[in-house]
Length: 369
Image (tube, rainbow, N blue to C red; front, side, top):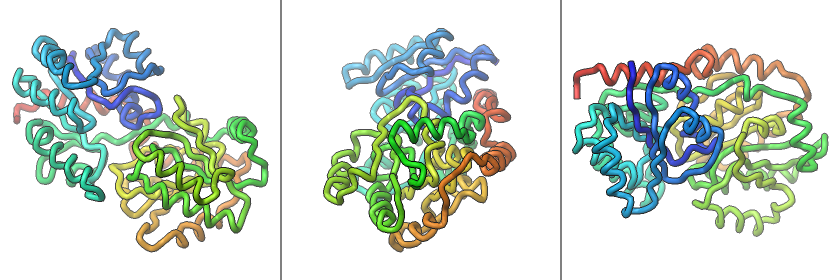
């Protein structure tokens, strides 16, 4: 079935989790002759944007309310069959409003996160998302059962697994050596890593406290891949205040995160909430002992490499567990085992890449509104 689809994302950079999920499904959409355009909050050139350009896709960038008329005309004259929302913000509310006004047949709200009320800002965002997004959409999609039930309540929804290219994330000793040499990491240094934004969601101070304690007991480095402006100042100040500058490697935002997992010996991300957390799947595919909080949905525990630990009882449980891990060698057994488990559970793109097209056609052919 040929469909014309407008997909809203924060941006299409390779370091963005939503972009990775959507673009993992993109080739199959094109293969089925779909026309796919993107509405973005930011536009960053990447292999993804190059691919969309090559296939004749268009981009619309929303910078401010001045762009509202541009969005109105896009929906009014775009003849879209589906508008797919991936992130709650002013752009998504405007898209949903005009999609409903101009009778786009299917408006999909995609939940990538569970419900969280840690800050007043979170509470307000949930309220806005529900009343200006969820209520006005007519199809619902989630990354996990909990992410769907938390956001949609009793509404019916489909699940799209956050599938990854397992081969891309498999352990590679040569890449490990190259990254560790680049950052002058000695062979006897244990590297704890994470791949995430600078965000309160990821519980960054908790991670840094783990490092502060572990450095007392063994030679370590903390490799942090990713960045954002959200919580950066607080993180930088905490590193400075606690004399962690020599212990923390701030890699920043990179186009390909897969290489960096190889340099690590353990992976941590003690999030306050997660829809799934695709980085947990990537870390396991690389064969890393992987530690997430007990707020992370059970679907993330695809292998025996994953441990779910509490975040309300201090860091000692985390430190004691991580201390038992060894520095990795060129042994690939853990990565091979993990990739098989990920494949069998439907999180490998090798056997899942057509799922979004299947969901689109299901929604489009469903007569219920």
